Length: 418
Ligand code: XIL
Image (cartoon, rainbow, N blue to C red; front, side, top):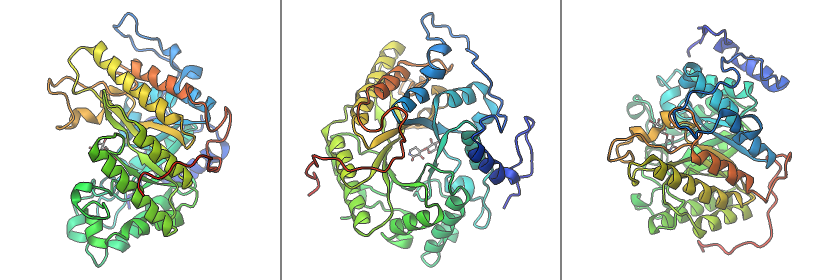
């Protein structure tokens, strides 16, 4: 294991001291305990004459302040290298978010340099940043078919896979035990196209361990960190297209199987990678309500809105993207068991969509899928997200505890999946 003794020029604690310092931050609640070099408000010049000023979107007007007033959490996926190297990025994340998730830094490929070594430096950076800014952290993720390290295929076999997975979860979830809001324990395990009656994806974990790998992962996670909310996370379950109806149905069946076996699962993450113009509808609302009847929360875990089908005009794209944010979040946040929203990034500058062959714009222009644009000005999507947060009428009251135990409501909808 790396001993992580290098120190940074800005005087951050050494990684060796991480657990001690993070615990101290958590215990004292001193947000200034760890200097992070992202000082007070500093507006970037913006060429758009009508661009909102920073003071219109930070402090009491930030997403996190509005979310707190409604007993909600709001945040984004972050990259520790940007937190370290881009002061505007760090300031925006600090201003706007009450919950962070590492975009890549807690994936197997990031943590497992070799079969024997873990490198927690980047992951620790995210946790330390969050704790020092009074932010929660989601872990992403403990078990996924992607982002497996190069050595995995030649090292992990049917004979040792269950042990590898268990030890990974013990080590990673154990390291951050007591500090995490939630963990994506299993990511994207359902794939209708794999053609199995149980809907499970043909993945290395399925092949090496069998369908029991999900149960194994959730039980190991609960044991390693009894206080984190354990989440099953998936995409392509938002719309009422036949493909997504089928996948959503398989996710529901999976969750039911897990619950029936007493597997510890607390939440379902709906990734919410949408395309401008998408109109999620009744199917997703039924899904959320059925999960609520089962005592599960729903987190919006990775929202962004792709504008690749729209023409070049920025105002046109921004309007359509914002409408999709508004409609989707207003619908979802009307449900009491949806109280946490994360976007997959905070600024268009670093969106993963620009690197995706199948999702980037045919004209090669950068996408505008997030609440802040390339220059850290808030986009119409910012205001749509904030308005949707303000539209919340149900669930926790202002100042309430977003972690209050779930209480099943009345008016149980009949299952769509029976
Ligand atoms: C993506 C990251 O954003 C990229 O930087 C990386 O190259 C690939 O993974 N669903 C997930 C996330 O659960 O982990 C993915 O993140 C996006 C889709």
